[in-house]
Image 1 (cartoon, helix red, strand yellow):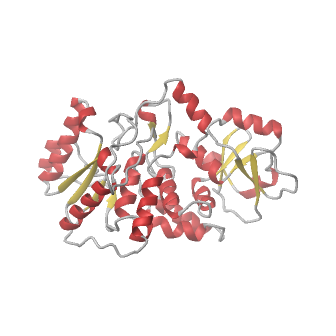
Image 2 (cartoon, helix red, strand yellow; image 1 turned 180 degrees about the vertical axis):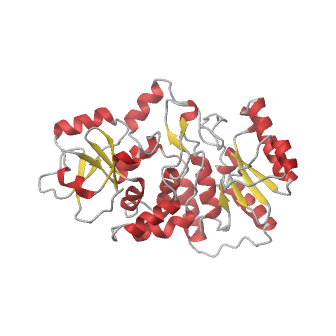
Image 3 (cartoon, helix red, strand yellow; image 1 turned 30 degrees about the vertical axis):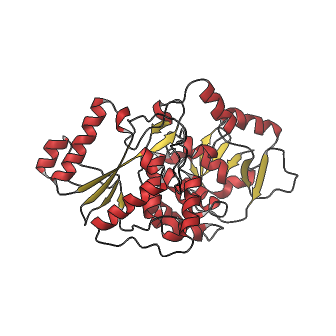
Length: 364
């Protein structure tokens, strides 16, 4: 019997994975023939993956027996191409990041799906044992890989939805707040974003020799960038919590970008948590792009409020009891910021302001 995690359970696995397994673990849909669950197997899964929340979502080819408590068994007769399933542990197979997102597309709202896809395309994993609660890793997938998989895969539920949101996905983000900043600025009005299209996320640029001397780097990687307009947006933690070395590195990066003619706008955690502050930043970006910030959807205010209620936290995709145990053991440090090195103090809700939306500052 094999335990084949799908949908929400696969997402929990990949959010905490240190890396994508090697190609030796890749398999195809023949594994579904032996998919199933019993009480002993469920106990084994709880031992091996305590961070996967209940109910556990499992996939098999056919299932005619009653559902076990704490499980949701999904049966599928779809044909899946090779690479759709990955062996990750003895007796445990997980839907690939690409298939996992297609499975989630019918369960999540569009902003939630964009956030989940961006997290699997990001350069961090959720890890309460690491400083800041985040560990560095290479992206598990990217938009090109997602598009390629959807092109090879026979139409399945969610594939059309996933293909439609690919232009909104942030790649190589270094923290959940950076993903959220990308969503707020980039998503169209009817999804609650300001619709500032044309930006690239974490794309390296080649600095001039002068900028290289200033930054002491051969490449510069702005968090967000409108290259043609020479505009960069950098996410930064509250300056008072930076070490002198971190502050110096950030200052060098900004000076190097400015030396090459870039206008650099810095967004702090407090600004990101405030919809009013982000609207002012969006207007400032629009002025630099020589555009007017036009809200063209009557749904914008409601969807924008919903986006801020969602926030940037990813911890609700993990088992809450497991998270509480890790935190009670004192192993969770404050949130790391976009460069993965600058811890931010977790001090709860920002100051409330009239007619403003603010979100809590989460641990992940």
